[in-house]
Length: 119
Image 1: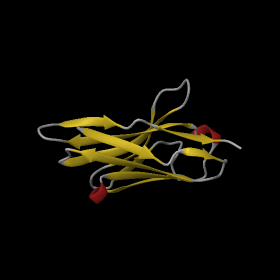
Image 2: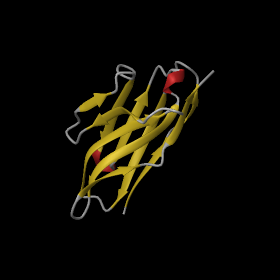
Image 3: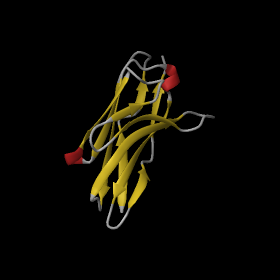
Image 4: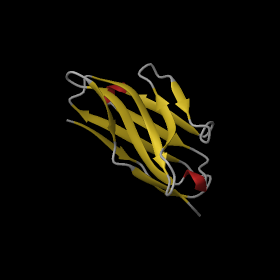
């Protein structure tokens, strides 16, 4: 069984910063891609950022230059540093990982963490 547990969400003022963390645990052989997605009310889930096991990164257009994704392979953890936050960044943020367990590779999702940007 594999679990992804997110932390770090909350309420922040426009222009502020937050750091999200997502730790994977369980019967893990290796983690390939790790990433963050978000879903605002009434909108589709969208890619925020993704990082490969060789640390290549890709960002959604709306967060480029403001957000930074990183990972600690020893801790099976991915981070999202969010700076210069805007009200339109308000959403539930989900962690996703492509994880190889005993026999096959599957996508796993965290439970989501709320980020609210408001004055």
